[in-house]
Length: 242
Image (cartoon, rainbow, N blue to C red):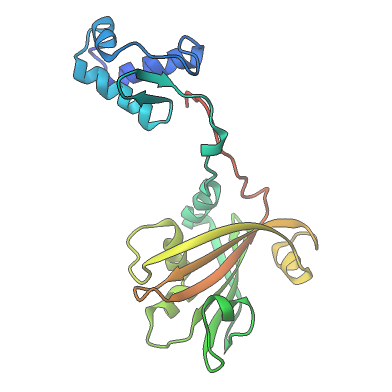
């Protein structure tokens, strides 16, 4: 243990144990030394040893079994998660984003938005279609719908890309209570391909989003179309040192 290190003792011990698991010193299914044994071996308190093991447990590297000990987990692909890190990173680079609204209109809901938003025959929606480019290259085509209400701040949100991206990637936006995202594959239609400067029929990701207001009513619906090359989905399983 490096007492001069700014890293807390429990974090150092957690790193030592993680390295031991990575090297195979503690293979999957094996039991880690007892916390009292770790404390004595590394010259730390029992509380520090417990904190170190808790870090490994939080990282899903080990599991505690009451009355038996702490065991190294096997690699579990079923617990892996795919995130939208590359998508969020681009949208966070506001200095290099360019937005061009290619279509905006108030119309009667007649497509998928009618069912998703629960529209009646008399209800109108605002539809906004925009190309969002990053570093002067088309990144995604975004289509959005919201129930038409001139007094609602949601209208401003659907026209303001900075606010819009905050709905998904930032905290603190208060007009919506909750939302859901769904990722599916689709093929580009001719107009979509032209706007994205891609080939007709090329496979892309379709990222649907649906937001609810504080009355639990669906309020805003839409989707992003984006090439898998610009939004790769990567999930890491097992033990990584980075």
